Image (cartoon, helix red, strand yellow):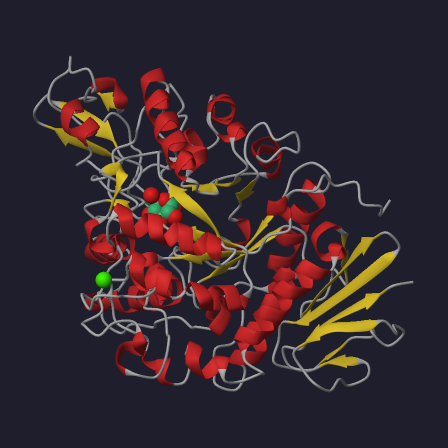
Length: 558
Ligand code: GLC
Ligand code: CA
């Protein structure tokens, strides 16, 4: 069955580009990216050909977690500009045929949000139940849960001698979604943004809004704290609350909605992103970027292997077929750079492997996401000193694990170079001038010194650049329905070096093969095919083999 039975939707045909505003473009020389910087670069994104921009948070925030700690949902962060700047950016984006998807961070607020300022004042404050407050247990934390940013997930508040829950930093208290007033407030705010004409929401850790009411201790995972995930991810009421959100907000507009669903399984994803459209358009799953785990969770410098990557990716392709829609991504503001992690960022192979990885992802079924700079093949930052890091998660983990002796400083620095979120947060590399053309001032985080060689200006002048390769992949998706709607089938599923698959639609077949290694690999897939070559990262092919990081895509119209 390869006829197109999939229900059509604009967001299924879209390619999304993520902007991390702080690091994208600074228009006023204060070293911090801003909205006017984004507006100035809209023609660049239109040239790339993407359909949608997902903006990481631009709301008022004290920036404990770079905007993921919101103190006012209806105002723009002072450093990023004003609401007038936002309105102009939105109008200009639409004029350039670009839609805007906002980040929605409502699992928690900032502790400086007016609701929390009230909530912590007294036990009978009207805002008390907007957050999750618990009595001490034996004079200590209510349970052993650890925060995602190190330390306990509970903070003691002397004013009322109780603890509040914060799955992230202590400046990010978790909202109590079981309180209908919280849901009213959030849905009102969402409607307010929709009325402004935005085109969707990316929902931050939305799988965490319903907690296990028993608040049990979790299994201790790093000798320090108990796991929190099992009791906060995909909780008992999460689908009920999202269905309510859908009824009261989402269904009234034509939106792209994508849930960042930490801990999601395929079974859960089929509910969140179900084809009936009662919850969200799609979700981000994280299995493929969580393949390697050390003794202290994500902190390791072990490289992921294709033999572990493929079964995960293919599983999501097979299992959601006809039931729910996939999102496709290699990196984002929380992940290291894809070419450094899954490819090869040496001078010799960076361009080839960046194109190969792009091919592998963009020919799959689902909506592809490109993280700023990925289209240039930007690499990890590889900072040498802890002082260069800005990310709260990286800095806290460094201190927690080196100070309690679990890891040496040298090991931790190696892990950060491999995995820290700051690898993706160095400024966008626009040109070879000072600070990569990102700012005329001092950037808030160091620029990757390789900007003199890797930058947008140079790539726009080079027809063989990573930029034009992405442009072509996007254009192909917009031209060939098989890339959007075709059914997926894995090939060579035992290969340790080649990722291959085909897509099928209405009698057509698209064959894709990618060599994940720097060695030539035998591959007979194309020897008997005589279809049209849609894209390839080598000009010449060798019969019976794929060359180092070679990627090929053939469309057979028979
Ligand atoms: C999400 C965001 C991340 C943030 C966290 C807490 O995972 O992507 O950047 O730190 O939620 O809001
Ligand atoms: Ca600025």
